[in-house]
Length: 252
Ligand code: SF4
Image 1 (cartoon, protein in one colour):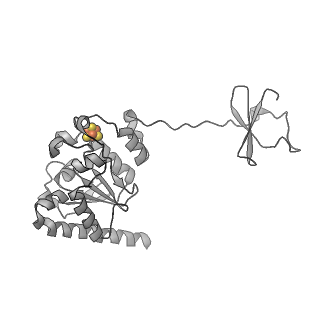
Image 2 (spheres, rainbow, N blue to C red):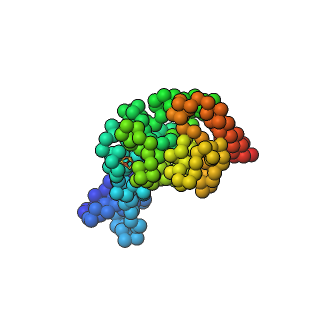
Image 3 (cartoon, protein in one colour):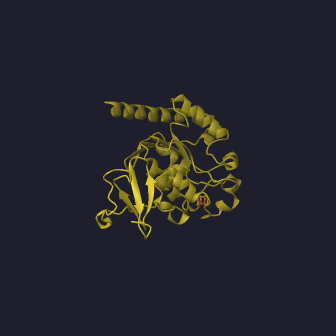
């Protein structure tokens, strides 16, 4: 017993001793207590297993169990050429347990400077659209298919978004949203394939696994084509209706 180093843990609750090999062994009795038995048979006491969390890095980012872990793991990604020219990696923003996920295309100049999606003019319009259906950025989650700005704001094609798409899919896996609002053709085609045309599918409900996806036009398109606001308004009203029904069902 003289060779044992006693360490007091959790004050009154439990005490530990450490044997010669440095392993922790719980002691049920206080040294000051009458029941303390210095000849306690240490072989009968179960050993405490030390559980160390694996460190999540870019090599094992798929093992991330939270959005924060995923962000930390992939924020220095250089998997494609967009990583070479970005200012800031744009992971996403909002409630990591949101029922509604909004998926856009890629960061623009403002987003690239700030490291947050939809902060330019298109973002301000998106905020107004969300407010019109009683939502805001703290309730939903907003992410892009591509996390780094394509130079000259190029619209990402399939070759451009393919290296980044697994990150969005992992975000969907972690958030587990009930609804995805797909903002524009890139978001629609990245998740459903090149044959899905936004002009045909906007305003329709598509199943992405057990998630309800509703495609609509990208806010940047609305800035160029204000006449499309009517369709987007119909699409987000559909989202709002289904979301309210879902919340009501949860209450019942
Ligand atoms: S765009 Fe995506 S795949 Fe390309 S460097 Fe950025 S995070 Fe990596």
